[in-house]
Image (cartoon, rainbow, N blue to C red; front, top):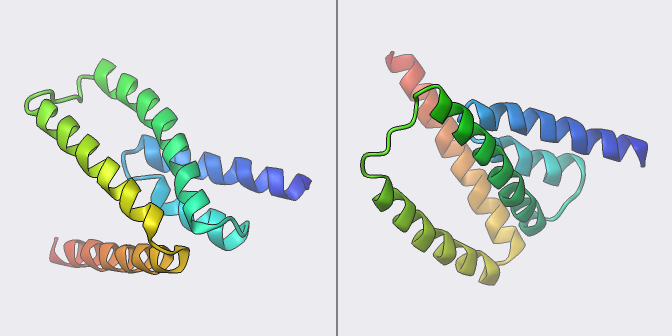
Length: 122
């Protein structure tokens, strides 16, 4: 029980650091929760969304104070984000957890290959 609580705190710390850096803490949090703590895929994604809201709020305030926030065109990003978030949530609710897990794994592999390509090209 204590080890589990420690792992939750550790994984929250790690994903918070990466989320604060703008690198997407959920990219780490979801696999950490599913692989090491046996949390289901859909529950892990839900936990990630709640954690993301808190991390994003604090990161937004800090980036705004440092002058790193560009507001031009932000309304289009917000509106499309809302529409596609609702659509994605509805889609995730009808897809099996196994399919969702596979799709997320493929996404992570493609993302890592793209990042490797960018690093080699640079």
